[in-house]
Length: 493
Image (cartoon, rainbow, N blue to C red; front, side):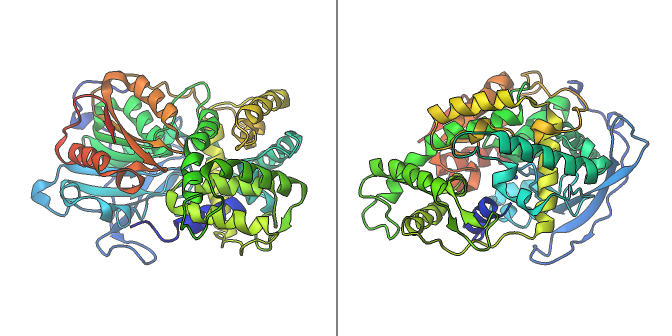
């Protein structure tokens, strides 16, 4: 069953806030790590079997004897010790996502044979509370997703976006502290290897979703001999020259792949939220409404910003296309706005949560690779994007906070290669607004003989046990439970 708050949270975000050696690993090859002290998890709502602990890791891996930070971790142990194979790391998306409660949440959805085979391991990545946390002290207007994932002005100008990037970057430099400089995907991978050692595991298995697929791929590149069964679900483009810029740019095609599914749904007879008589009418109707709201925004009390303008509608569209279950939210918003009204603004997470998530997202994305700093680069990209992909109006090639980031990357981005054991299974929906299939195919190509890919004829972000289909789910479950992958890349109709 889908989480009942998923649609609410996505629209809230739209309105309220973003190698080692290949030789067999020996016990002496792993760094010494203190045993974890497991205890009761703070708060409520988790499986009573879930335990929590804190892992101490270096803040700066170039200075391992320097200050340390805490990584909050969780586990539910194998339900059948005699069948236990090892630990399955649940690697969250984001950056800014947590899997700390996932052993109790998505872990319950795993088939019994998988829950028997593994201890399920969750964690809050470095910088994200309740791990040692970061905060940029952003102005409230910059907690909106239309600021952190900025949309150009109605005329295509990016000048205001560049000013916002500078304002946010200056706040992060002023308030973020030393830890902000050491947020990166490579450091998250190092943290996971420290966790592996602390658990006493020679190798780990993993289920990484969305940004977690990049974390998993980087881990497999840095520590290939320590990978057991790796499932990468809803996959990021691993282009080392662009990293997150490629992920952002992917939304252009992701929306084009997915919007027709919304249009078909929104024109279906009997749909109480029917937007148009035919699917062909939905796209021009959306574009016309967005253009009208560019000219004449509607007040939207409780939203951030407190108006429904064209970009807020576009962001709501993007957020709703993550999951077909969220299509009604977009249709209702369109129908209301066409009448000159708006539904109540969705509840937003607390500002403190948004501050923390925004800082982790910005720090990780901006520290992974240097972004262009020239306004002209973004102006040109936005102009080209708006001409080819009007639904996304240039946002995927726009300047975000990284365009003014004050810190250079600590190290070059990871180049994903085919060097290492063949231990990876990619699963990918064919229509995914956030991580389109084109980017997944680039990760598949980079991994080469190390991977097999299952492409699923389905719509939505997150495939396994969520928006995929029975064929894809069965292939992933079989791999996790038995180690058997399809003999070649598989298409699941």
